[in-house]
Length: 185
Length: 158
Image 1 (cartoon, rainbow over the protein chains, first blue to last red):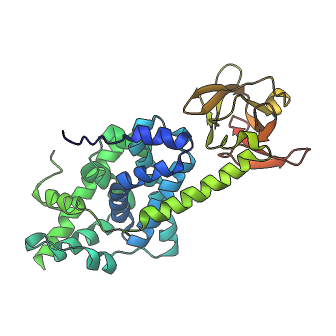
Image 2: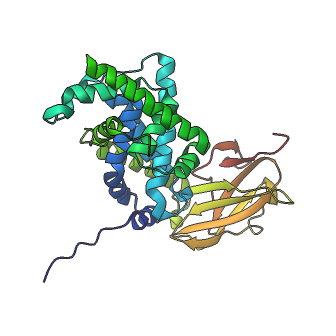
């Protein structure tokens, strides 16, 4: 007789939290933290701001869980909160004049794979991404890394599909140029 | 898609790799979440113990405008309550005028049409305990010293 592991769905965990079991929220944090941490790091460019944004998103998600538009849609709903937190934080950082374009700690932390996709390449990608206009960077990440459709992106960002396509296209073009320059050196 | 040639594919592969983050991230999030819960529970159970754990999360949602104002949804999560009503500027603070309906998972909800303006309100749990909305801003203090919540319904004049 085998052991059958039945994974609790997001919807079940959300319903438990809404019924008063706040500890059930930990299951949602564990399940979604990696995706949120990755997006925040790429948008904000450094670990400290990214982790603050992720924490803020989770806490705000808990606070307004009753407004979630369907317990089984918790993941996309929370991700929308994170996108907004990142926008806010990026604006604050930009006003402080402290945009980080090179994150030594992140590079030290990362395990560099062997071969051409190693540290130099990671560094180059992080640098090129940080040089994009924030709306272009956001659109590029949502489309190609998070793999959202343009309709989903439009709903999330409040920007029209046509403008989003333009941003993604511009981001790709800029990344190609910058990374070609890096590889020539 | 014409955007994704080999150079962009390499970028995407790099960006899809997991990024390192603090091992105590969950612990820090949960510390803040549990602190929020303690705060919320204290607000909602005070002053009558019989509605312990009656509080949790609440929400106010404003929907599209109608002929007689905009429908506004008021929600309170109160799993142990036997009745919840809403009182406010819009119903003369009458605890019998606007009962909330239990919707499942311990949530209670009522929809009220409100003209543009700002309204103070509170929930009445089990006909006796007035609690502010844990999810809404606090505004005025009523004549008996309890804080109320405030909802603003936007309109042409606001």
